[in-house]
Length: 313
Image 1 (cartoon, rainbow, N blue to C red):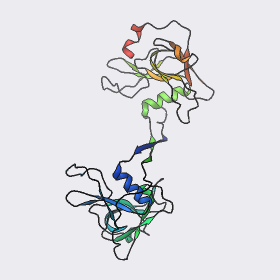
Image 2: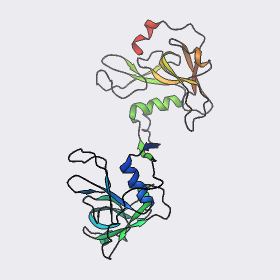
Image 3: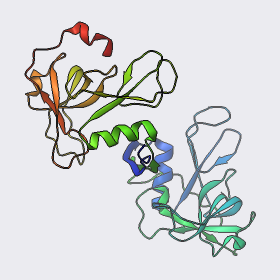
Image 4: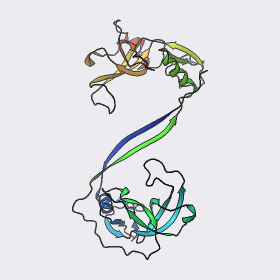
């Protein structure tokens, strides 16, 4: 039994969203070193602002300026800052109720250590040198011993408002495929494809999952399948993916390898994209040093009869 594999993985994509009038004013205000909240019908001031009252669900747009000073309501010390966090040295995550607000804003507090942080301490905004209309325009909070800054009277009207933002989403984690898929990946390195047979229904699953998805029982018996197979369904890709050196259009399909009871997906090549069809018989194409097939190409055999793969669609 080979050692179970593991590898670091990163999922990352930019999330682009438009802003309504309240969020637009809030972020534009940060760019201009102004903190805006929104007043509810019962007189509460919410910072950060929302467009609907969380209690009554009524739409709210009455923008009011609050002070850049406030009070820490609760906190937690961050011993090891991670990529993309506000500070690259240890800091405190704090909820700060700004003067003039009734709710708290989450951000970082630059402090020398956890002993310097306490609930009830006074802090103020430290503005970023370069501001673009994002929450990062507040570089962080810092301890403040002065008097409360009076809220201004800004109405939230700006000549050049921010209308949209791009928020990067990123997840870093360590992935382990487990025993069954480790064996599958190891076999692929030897240009073999193996699945596992369910001891109850006797179906062979590729890639193996370690358990039968139908019967729910553990699987352990390895079965070599393929290398040839049948295209069951497919799609034509017309949008080029970032960092993928494949010219569009190209075809991605589900391929039922001979001997398998579950279709896997792979790219179909060696044939014009508009000639790919259900039932097409294909075989894997390997490149030197690759750990998995680069694509599948037609074998030249007659197409498979629909009855032989209809249960694998």
